[in-house]
Image (cartoon, rainbow, N blue to C red):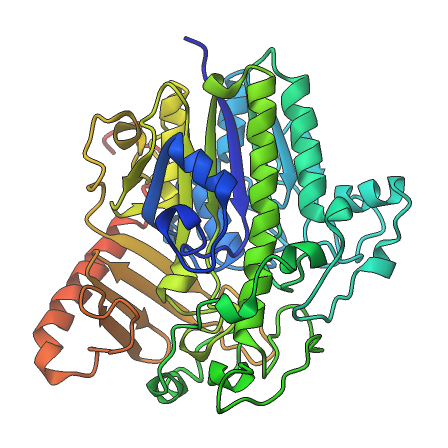
Length: 493
């Protein structure tokens, strides 16, 4: 049997409740829904970090952050001793390619330094679409070839609002590159990573896509007035939003409304506006995802047209989520709410894996690397810590059980002007979510069975002290079990 092609699509900062196949309000993803109907959609998939680089290092190595130790955005380089998944496929004879972000090391103002052996034969690199690069940014080269001046179409300080037209959008560029790659390499097994920038801020979809989404029909952020007082306790915990605000202040339908500028000027792409229309932002966010959805549909169409659909395993996911005003917080940081750490995950391989199936099992992005290796009948190296999802995909294991808990970590992941290098970790067993902010002596404990919106913190409750102690012990044990093996042992001393 021919080994499957691998089409691995990763969005950036797309939260879990953005797929219409699960009935989420505001979502409109017909092509992703169709992909899910041809495979398995995982409703409880969790990232190993709420920040890009450590999350990507985890799913590309199959290791937890505490094991690979690539904890920060903005690193000078990616350690050469870490083995990336694409290299395994390249060594097995696959034709490999990257389109979009890699984001394993610094990419601000410079083209990212590639790892010594990343495994990619074709490399079409593009980080954020703003015109900061003079060369080496494939999307900007594509724009130049179309006669488009990137400086004329991008506003780096716009927090949200209509953006560049769809025909010159970075997502469109990625789809065009991918269709060409898949068509050219149809006669050999291939492995293609597409790492999109959207729906990462700024929230700036094409105007015609934004027109499809009525802000008035968008769900409001998950918020209670008690959030404002609760978040004050975390003033010294790193977060791109410096303070929590009441998102109703920017909602024109609210009695608390204060007008927020449509094109809010900020201190930079990573600093959210202090006042914003959260429902309008959500419309922008879903419009960005709608463009991604159509790109996915075009890629599936190419697979069908070229006769590769049954030979291709397709993964769609995101590296982490986005707060979108939940609990009064925008963007990302050292928090472990569902909107931040729970992500979409769909895996399809028509004719081989189950179709039109939904899984409620706890799964992690660290599970993807061993899954892809096992699907391609390649050995899973000892250092990988994820657990293959292939038994669930093929129907050899129950869809509702995979792992007893999931983990997530934040270790000095963001470089913020007023940051302190926060260190925190999360343990979630499917009911209780325990978050420990190690450097400031704080914690949170939520019972998601009775409190799915994470409003009622049980950490300070004296009646929950026994439960908290038990969960802290489990959390400590789980973290110790994820620290990694180190070099292979070849002797007994």
